[in-house]
Amino acid sequence: MIEAEGKRIGVGYYDMIEGAGAHEVIIETPEHDVSLPDLPPVHIKWVLIAYRERLKDLYKDPRFRYGLVFKNHGQRAGASLAHPHSQLIATPIVPRNVSMKLDAAKRHYENKERCLICDLIQQEINTGSRVIAQENGFVVIAPYASRFPFEVFIAPIEHNHSYGDTSDDDLERFSHLLKDILLRLKKVLNDPPYNFVLNTSPNTEAKPRLSDQWATLKYDYHWHMDIIPRVVRIAGFEWGSGFYINPSVPEEAAKYLREIS
Amino acid sequence: MIEAEGKRIGVGYYDMIEGAGAHEVIIETPEHDVSLPDLPPVHIKWVLIAYRERLKDLYKDPRFRYGLVFKNHGQRAGASLAHPHSQLIATPIVPRNVSMKLDAAKRHYENKERCLICDLIQQEINTGSRVIAQENGFVVIAPYASRFPFEVFIAPIEHNHSYGDTSDDDLERFSHLLKDILLRLKKVLNDPPYNFVLNTSPNTEAKPRLSDQWATLKYDYHWHMDIIPRVVRIAGFEWGSGFYINPSVPEEAAKYLREIS
Picture: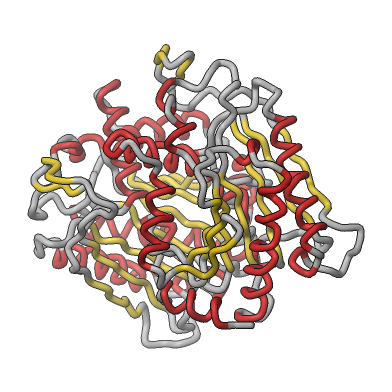
């Protein structure tokens, strides 16, 4: 479907997408042989601030509807450069996986008038067995329906839909938890290849404007980070189904990650 | 959403799914050291008939809504056993990726009153540049929007929504093309790891019945096989977006695969 200003104006084989985008590489340190969690928290904070500043700057361009910040560590996780780096790709549409999350958050809000991720966080804190760490206003969780062994979810406990709206102080507190969980994963899984992905609000100032399908995203969405250690391989079942066979139990992953010193 | 007989009866955090499934391993040959395309076509035909017979048998169980046949070849493609084998996993729900395809086929049918994949095949045959082979009633294509380098799509040219409805003769003709394309991929990409996935109709006799969302699937769906050589790695951008960065051009992949002898 070709959509403009929320109105369908035609039907074709392919969505018509504006041919605009941006791809930036964030060099995390001048040193070639260190990895992100080995850097001091204040240094990690500056990397996290760089993500925010670049996102905010790119969102000034109304052609960009989403900015995806991610990191590939290790060859099996798709890293093509050894030097420590993260990436930011801005796209002229909201990516499919992001729009599915936004849709789910919106449905929950319609039913409950609460943020889905706030509710998930509270449920996880009450349950406790999948919480890896909770401090300084952030929580680190092995998700209930983890797709991958030792998958990790990090989010601020207080509601905030947009990483672009974080303060330096928020990111300082985030840097300590991120360093800590990456070091724990490194120790438990012997420096595994991993990806992390920052999930944040789309660019609400994009033009043509986002259709009103996500009009409540400020209330129903909640920025978070997913960390995916690449210890199992994706195979035919996953490609064909979109479902993930996970041979491990998140409660046990949380226990290992909590207990390692 | 909890759905029964197409009616929403409640809203919860998690879909309620019947805890039933089946997982079968299809041993392709008693010989440990051969690979599927090295077998004679008549032998491959019997493997393809085994897929069909097992699907038909599992679809007699009304708890199973879908049967996913797939093959993982090579360690990087997730194969955990070296002996040549394929797998069949029956699930009590229609997997997400399958339901997205069924939805797309249905939307096209609503607009055009024609099968999406019949239309795609005709468009590809007319265009020609992405066709790798066309013979015996089957077509082998490098898809227009290939997610992966050297991704391959095979389907019968004549409309048929269900692999379970194929004849022995259909599968004999399919076996020749499957052997041929797997040998070509082996030669061009130096025996790459790969996955293949058979896409077929869900079990229309499942109970509770499939909701009427796919009432026209007999007319709008079309069985096909996707072959995914695993020559690039999935990384953070793909996990976060659901989009795939493909550094190669399908027209060139088709040309290489056509020209190799």
